Length: 161
Image (cartoon, rainbow, N blue to C red; front, side, top):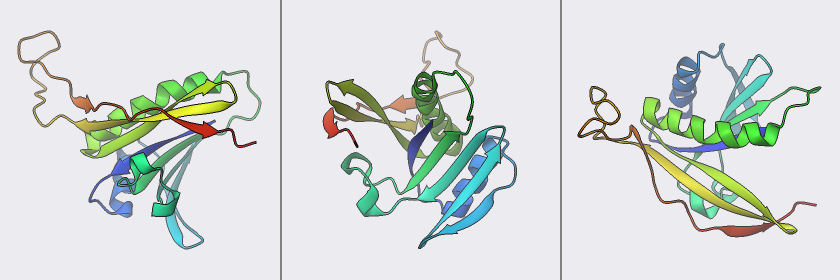
C-alpha cells in the first residue's frame, strides 16, 4: 500500500525533507541518489517515507506545477488489513497536515473504479492565511486552518493490466 501527496513550494528538497522529518518525528533520513534524481528516505515501524522531485514529464496535468512528492508506503507483508481504506483515509490527512504546518500547497488524488476503468480527480489544499488559532470552532469568525479548493474534474484512466 502506498499513496502520494504532491507538494508545491519554493523550498529546496533538502529543506522540505528536513521540515517533514521534524514535523513527523521521523528518524534521520537517508539521502539517496536514484538515476539522475535525489530523494530522501525515512524508515520507521513498517513505514517508508520518500520525498523527491518529480520530473515534469512524469506529472499528471492537474499537478504539473507541484514538483515534489511525499510518498508513504506501509511495508507490512503479512496482514489482514484493508490497506485501500487506510490509504484513502491517510492521504487527505497528510495533505492537510503538510499544508498547515509547513505552509505549502498540496494535492492528492481520489480514485473510483467504474467497470474496467479508473476515474481519478485531484484535491488541492493550502493553509488559510486568515486562520486564527485563538478562535474556536463554532465561535463567530472561525475559519478552517486549511482551505481545500474545488477538486479537478473526473477523468478516466485505463487499468494498468
